[in-house]
Image 1 (cartoon, rainbow, N blue to C red):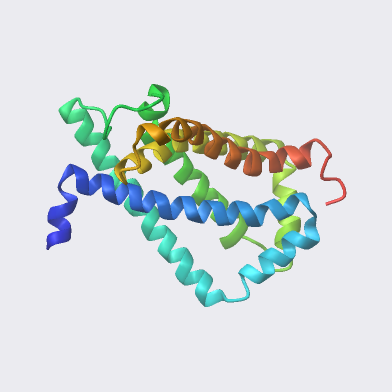
Image 2 (cartoon, rainbow, N blue to C red):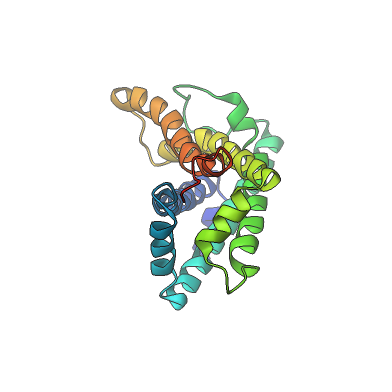
Length: 215
């Protein structure tokens, strides 16, 4: 099949990584928008959660689709990592505007850590969720605890590091590379990860510091 032949090429793998990364980034942005309701209050977050799960079939299909995209992203990412190790070459399309060697070197490890977080997160808030407890209250219970909160914050720090290199790589693969935009791109590789870190990582801090006492 042409797709298999395409995937075997380096540019094919990079394009799959870029497209799957864009889909995951879009999902993350939507999720961040919904989770931001936590800062307004439990009532509004519960409205968001109820609206999201009012179409269980669509949620199931969407969740399955995200899982397939995530597995494709991880699988091809591992292939690229092994390919890079074999050829001793860096995963770059062109010279980076602002090189972050730590972020690029740790991409496989931060990616796998994020995957571990996703499994635990889905299990805790989905599969193992008691039916008689509202999701808004479950969020507060989990993210008021020290150890889960610490794991949650570390996970989104790992995500921020992953996105710092991944966001730039995605844009480069799509050909968004021009002297006119390179300064903006270099800033976005910091702004986008930090924005997600503040929205998601701030939630356990919001509860643990008592700022969410009226939640």
